Length: 173
Image: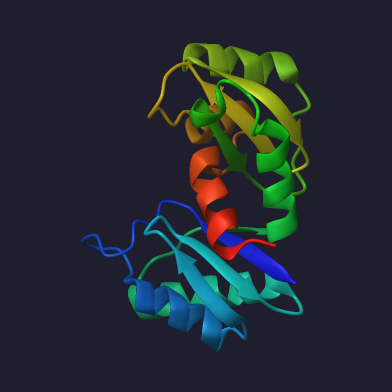
């Protein structure tokens, strides 16, 4: 089964950031197969029997080898595809992003999340355990991560739905 790892605050190739080959090597050393980086934003597709364990091990390798201690969120590629498909026909598709956080965390207080979203000129339009789809007021904004982090007090990372659509189109199901 293909999984997608979303590394938080990683911009491959930038000063002080791991290179693509460092990320691929970390996942391979962790036991992942068919490792495929996508773009330079810390998004990695891979296959593993235990994707969460592989991602955590890869995180450790990146910390040791590159000095980068980041949070990694893993989701099945099928989940990502389903989220994108549900929002594909929305007129605001280009302004939406998938924000990921710990799978054991829920947005239990919609009002608190809504208040944070309003403050940042966005809205949470769908959510579940460990994820939310955030719609920004304008193109090229990315307010999902700070909104969810402020509302829940937990690390998060976001990818735009158009980016995820390209990922699915390129590496699809």
